[in-house]
Length: 359
Image 1 (cartoon, one colour):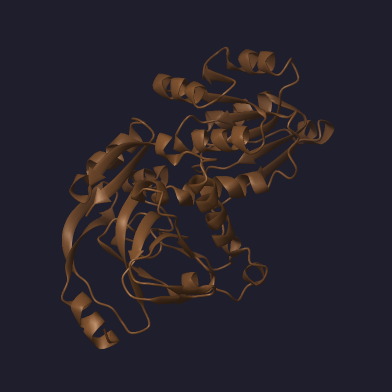
Image 2: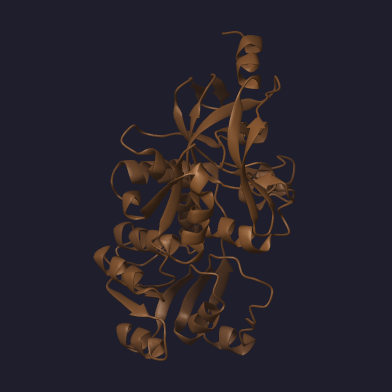
């Protein structure tokens, strides 16, 4: 099929999209689809609803200029051969997509730290995302190897969760070498917290506890291998200290945007510990740790953001070989016409991850 024939076929398509027009204004509408010669287009097979999507829907975000299609946790299918750094993605190939769009010119891009690009754009935040039948892939993503082939044994909805798994891998990469004797505390009992739990237990074999607020998720954490799982409350500090023989946790991963988690982290951190702020927070978080406490206890507070294509490739391997079971994270499936229900389920902490898998 020549490009002109292929592009003409796509140009005649009308596809449904979930268009974000502003806070509390998300509309499923029909859109005509077109393609320029320098663009690559893929068919979306599944797109998961991230907590970020729910927060943008409710409150907007400084990065998001409406109208825009949200969604960045994507499984897609190649429609026309795409030349990538390691070969050719043939038509029909299923892929996971790294949503970061780097400038390729700054010092971070030169170091292949594309997630830290000084002029970063992102699918589902600054360009249209995956809550649509088709998706245009920026050329920068192709150049950095951001289209990752996925094994046949992964379902579409599992492929969609490779992106958040890659982000969790990036978080662990910031922690340095992890001693199996370390204790890890994960604050947050959602999809991200329980993905961190699987990594802690299956890659690092550490003594790991989870703190959360939803009873069903606490039980899920226990069933997924947590050594302990605590409900957040007045006794949480004592619970964690007892769990760590009074020392506090060596590694704390804050996998929730609830600001209460920040203060809890400082109260249960061991000397020489590391606290990873995985989640983003609103500006009124009120977090102001005592610098002397940090200094005299040799505590490191670090952050992690997004991931790189190499981590997405590693995520695909870990999910394919069974090291990480992403099927345990998926609890709700919706069609695109049910996008508001999916966002509401996410916002109300029902289940873990909701996935749109019918377009």
